[in-house]
Length: 320
Image (cartoon, rainbow, N blue to C red; front, side, top):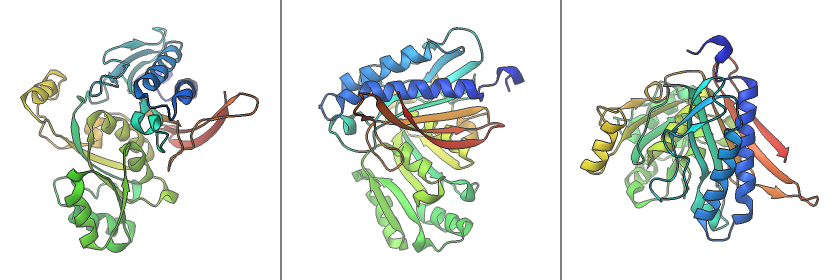
């Protein structure tokens, strides 16, 4: 743990990261629905980088953005901040759901997670098998069991029948078996096209009515998700899924010596001294999108989730 006066979870540092998230969302706004996701990603990335570099911290990007789609990046091991203040690991996606945003579709957002130095898994940009639940089902999931067995365990923890559960799954051919399994159990499926971070967080917020998120998605997003759920008291398990020798070797290069092992939330985020910030770019199930007002001011809607001794979350409307 960092020294008490050098903690990551301080109100000032969190508000600085919130500002970076808001600035990135505002910078992406002109590109909504214009079909050019790389320009949007570049605008969000540059705005975020500029703001993060003003923060009194010794920040290092451990989860960067853009390796798979060759978009503009906040690259892994990039150093950010003034060089003074706490040592911070940063996991970031300046525009999560760039394709959605480029097409003017819902659920695009800016996401940043931060934690004390050395505490976040350095996950390569590859696929990851995931399962996420909220606080009431913490300790009741096992990614090595079937989805049916997990649904039974979660339902018991939540005081529900299995058929009363809602399971969120990305609408992809690779998930057809999971979708069928939910239907056969008599439970509900809520499909989504992109951005599994939103669905995972929804499991930990009561009025979102999502009980489980399950499926295969990006590993970097899995680390960001784990930070948010750790702050919210939820649970998350994962397994990296390297597709070939090159991806397996990439795991080894990034310090993951046994890529096939199950990862618990504590393996992915080794501290309570962490926080998560997101700002909506387009409207979604969790956040409202950026809006321009009549006075040309930009309105943003953000979510701030703080772990450690503060342990809180709040939605924030702002004009910038």
